[in-house]
Amino acid sequence: MKRLLLLLFFSFFLMSCKKDKVDATTTQTLQSSINDMTSSLNTLQQVKFNEALYILKTFGVDAEGGANELKALGVLINGKKVPEIFSLADQVAQRNGVEWSSTGPPSLGEMNIFGNDKAKEFDANDIQANSLNVAVNSIGNDAVLGPQSLQVVPRLVDATGQPIVFDGAALEVVLEVFSGGSRILTAKNLMLDDNFKGFNVRFASLPSEKIVDQSIDITVSVKTTKKTFKMSKIGVAVNPRALLMPVENPADNSETAIEDLSATADASGAIPDAKVPTADPKASVSKFLNNLSAQNLRGAYDVADNPNWGSYETFSNPTSGFGGVKSINVKNLTTSNTSPNAASVNANYDITDKEGKIISVQVTFGLKNVNGDWKISSYKIN
Image (cartoon, rainbow, N blue to C red):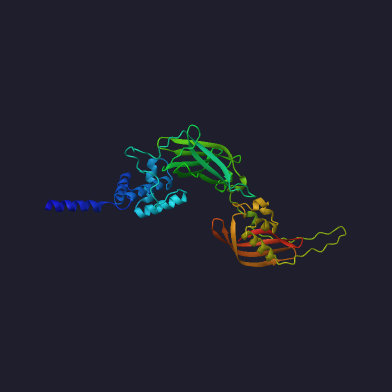
């Protein structure tokens, strides 16, 4: 009887020592704590838990090499319990465009972040391919600015160039973008089957100052169990008007001068009467802001005569101009100074950009008389 009680006590002691959260003190404690957490789950949950850890190791950390990835993963999930790890993996998968969720059925095969201890009878990642093809196409064509993105789609093919048909895999795909020999962009995803949608490389994510000769080189690698396939596209043209432009400091607009245009004498020596605007200068500013809010950039540009805004293409650029404005909420407009040939208007309004961010600004508009109409000639953010 005593022996039975001792055995029960020892079993209870072992169960109470099992960890329910990650201990990343060392690689050994990381693996031990994950094994303890896994053993408390049912079979389906165990598979999804291993998939979640794989998602976090592949996309949630920025490290090179298996050992470094494990160390970074440990830092990321240290102290977290199973529900927290599932939630974090969902966020990482969504942020990286990976078609995976913690509540879905198993979709990545047998995942083991510590490496496979024994060979499997069937390995969904052991794709028997001959090479990799990569298709690059321009998409998102704008009537004024031209294409906005490149769609990059890799396909594993056989010896005849035909796509390999497969599903149930979890092939790590890495996209790298270079220009002038320098890497300027890296992205990862998972190829689950032969219908992989590829990558969308937005020109607005490529800094214009790093692009050489208005072209980029694209390299894609796909990792199967036994081999990593790699393919490059050299000299892919980019749309310079859609690139990420450097932020400019509006030093030229640091002071808003109210222009007082003096009339000049004609041949007889008489000074002709200037055509004085009859409208309130606020009306021109209101028209400008309303056109921006309606995304009528041409209408907004026509209300202005500001050399600092350059051409219409520069004015309407979505990254360095007004093309990124989604809507404007005007709070207040007041005319602070006016004369027959010049005026200034103070404006207070909220800008919502096309990513949903809201910025409150106070702006002083300078206006000048152009043939009896008020035109915006300067723009200062206070």
